Amino acid sequence: MKKLKEIIRLMFPVAAKRFPLFFPLEALKTLCDILMPFIAIFVTPLIVDELVGGKDLTRLFVYAGILILGECLLTVIRQLSVNQLGKYKERLDNYFTRLISEHAMGLDYQLTEDKKLLDQLEKTNTGMSWYSEGVYGISEQIFSFIGNAVKIVGLVTVIALHTPLLLAVILLCVCLNAYLMRLSSKVELKAFERLSKVNRMFGYYGWEMVDFRYGKDIRLYDASGMLLNKWDGFSEESYQGWKWQADTTRKYSLIQGALAVFQTAFTYGYTALKTIGGVFSLGIFTQMVSAAESLFNTLGGIASNITDLLKKTNYAYEYVIFMNYPQAMPKGDKPVQAGEHRIEFRNVSFAYPGTEKKVLDGVNLTVEKGERLSIVGLNGAGKTTLIKLLCRLYDPTDGQILLDGTDIREYDYDQYMKQFSPVFQDFRLFGFTVSENVTLKGRENMDEKDRLRVSDLLKQAGLEKFADKLESGEDAKLFKYMEEDGIEPSGGEQQKMALARALYKDAPVIILDEPTAALDPVAEYEIYKQFNSLIQDKTAFYISHRLSSCRFCDHIAVFSEGRVAEYGTHDELVNIPDGVYAAMFEAQAQYYR
Ligand code: ADP
Image (cartoon, rainbow, N blue to C red; front, side, top):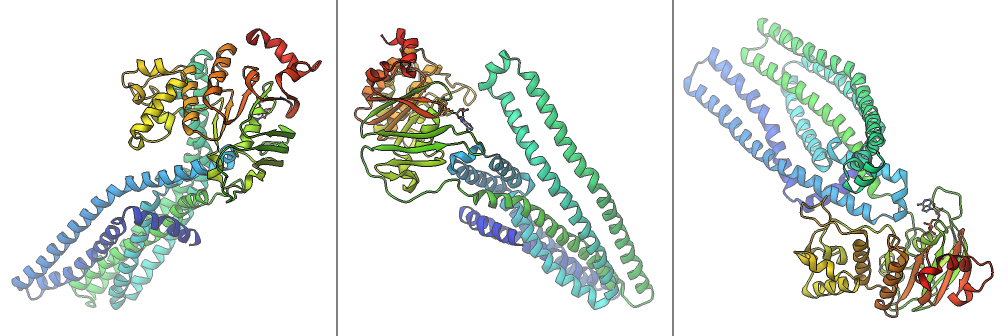
């Protein structure tokens, strides 16, 4: 009940605001459902008694007219509302999927590696889809419950007026039925828990198999066999889950069937005896039989409303858990000063969540306003991790990062994130148009100024020939897996687009984290040099396992095993005997001399 309350509180107002007609239509459908059986229950006995008694044709026509017209009218109204409601099913589903995605994109980055959260996201998506059908499924059950409850009060009154024993037998059968349904739904819930992980893995492997971006590796490393085997394994595991559910609930379904047969036989036998004994008229006999059948169905209906509602509530509650998933990082509300920034890492140490190893160990480093810092070091030295901490994708385990003298955790998160234009090694472009990838604005939100700027930035990033080649220029769509006429830019071209995106954001701090790793050292040097002139006097971090950017940076920090092993200018470092930098420079000097 508490869960249902929370679901109603969190989901229903949102749904009502977005689709104001949805709930009134549900109410109209329910009203028709309530009235429908009573027309027959009250009018049919009148017709039967008139047929065997008075035989007045006018009265018979009036009764038949009420019966037929009433049922017709209710059926039409009901069908129209059901038809309209059907249209909301898909729309509600899409709307809540959008809310889930919106929330997922806003979660702290470090949670994206949290297995518990990934499981929760999977449970939320499946739980809200066909397992519970979200607001649509739950409100359908609630309205049906209310309708059935009102019907029961009416039917119980009708039957109790004539035969309380029949009422008692029906109630007993229904209680047994409800108990069996509860047992079945417990089994289903257990199966849901069991299947959530398998479904996630299923989705992962299924997606990898058909994703063209993995196409090269799959073919050249002959990975299809392994992927298909994994798929078969999960498929078997999933089948076992479903089989267990079906096998365990079979006995409950059989007993439910037997109960229905017994109840019908008892109703007919008992009321027939009463009619033969002269206690009931033929009209009352038909009324009792149809009221009893209706009551049995309605009580069965309300019992299944309750079990369905309990089940759907448990599934849909995953949405409540997900939407309230605790953030991993504290967030402040201090505004960030406009302009350039001074950044200081003060004794910063860090281990990735769930791991022990210190990837950064007591890092002290200061970058003055407008300074260019080159961070170099072998792969795995901790360079990217330092940037992830600066960009608040993670928080340090120990120590502090200060921006203009204030701990970055105290700043308003959104404002803080606006201070950085990073290009990561594993940047991703979207299956949108070229200009949308640069601006990250929908085409409809871009004005002429934006377009000119994109065109200019693409040129500056070295893509002028690329854009000129395209028939639809900057409006060309990327990637064939999204659009039939999508273009497939080369790795280098994609990197340049990512650089144009960073320039477009125009944040005070620029970070290039080896986005040029796929280029040769000389091309990398050229790009860094050109980029360096484009960013004017902004503060910048250039990260590489090569020394391309060291020549034009104010300082160089050499990282080794999570520490700043050496720090200084190129000329200082190159002269340290047996120094890490000196050794790297010696090995790579051919490119930069
Ligand atoms: P660099 O940028 O210098 O190549 P990184 O900062 O990427 O180095 O990585 C430093 C260390 O942290 C490596 O040992 C790497 O395996 C580990 N590491 C990186 N990302 C994660 C992660 N998400 N979870 C656990 N360990 C990680």
